[in-house]
Image (cartoon, rainbow, N blue to C red; front, side, top):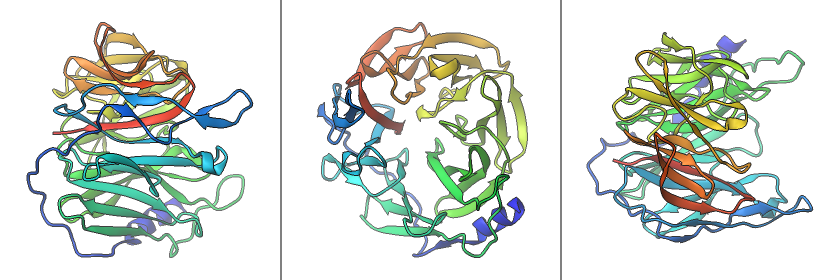
Length: 351
């Protein structure tokens, strides 16, 4: 059954406009300015949601990372669905988006957003926007011509795509794919290759994808993901054909924020390694041995974790989100967040 799902998912991807032109060098787009972030919510004492506190408190221009968007609870939907607020450089502000999630390429040129269908389960589109021209095109995902797999407890399983990740060179975009009734286990990855945004599906079964999925290595030649059960996991590295090339006997979910799970040199990688993601563990990529462990203070918010540069991590702190050295010292705070604010900022790499 899953085999039919895999082949049908690939065949059902249709580019609805002409192919993209090769990416050209562009100046880095302006980044969010200091000040409060709109639309942020927080949970009140009666279980409802009210206006939350979140603000940019540092100059984000000229950095190796970008604050591309953030997700918060949508108060207009009574605390149900989430709202994504995307940074629009041309308008110099965050705009509430229809995307379920989105990602901006490392050169700042391309934005890819995922649009879910409210009428048909399992059907969605990827909207690809060229920021240099303002033109967009869609990749339609229409799993209507395959027989969906049946779950163990009955009911139809539909594919769901999450956590878009650009490769460090900006030439590939990866999505984690799972089945709706087995959302904590992977079906595989979907990779779109530039310049044509040609999609291909790679089948990788039953990786553990609870609060994060597949992540790139430092040069985009491999990707990695967590396997096993909560409390007893490993991290596997795969090549671009889906062959496992290495397995690390380490704990935790690879951190995918900022410049990703691997340091820029590829010598180290980081995972959220304790229950409830209370710590960040840095590991030697050659040996898999522990290098250091740092505290994560998320105050109940979703964890931000990834590399900032070779000697610093981007990480959740007591104040919000900051840059932390490998001794655990906060060297700079980028976002200040209220303790009860329901927000997940989406930081990614910027050339």
